[in-house]
Image 1: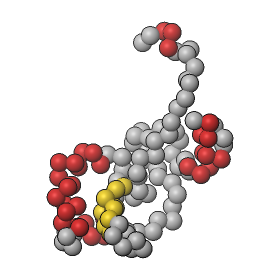
Image 2: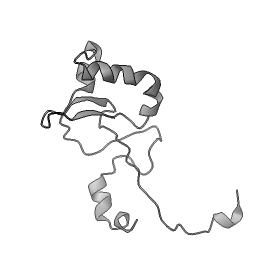
Image 3: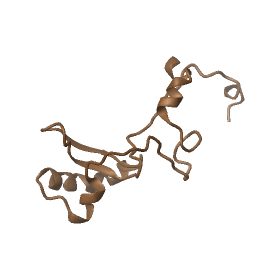
Length: 111
């Protein structure tokens, strides 16, 4: 550790909310309200690990051939939960933080 860094003030910071979904599943489907919009997003912030294999599955879904075992997991769903809670230490802050509440505290808007 460099001792002079421990007391150095931050000049700015950022929040990264990934593209998490409340249940950690991907959303790989056509948007139900916007024809022509296809989504391949979501997950749990660990989606990069699927890069070597997920592309082929995305093409399958675009082509109308979603693997049956993933239809319910990857479909468009309306979540009523605004929080993503992880207990594995993969997210900063306390579990259950809500972006709208954090933005309302003012410190985020100064970033």
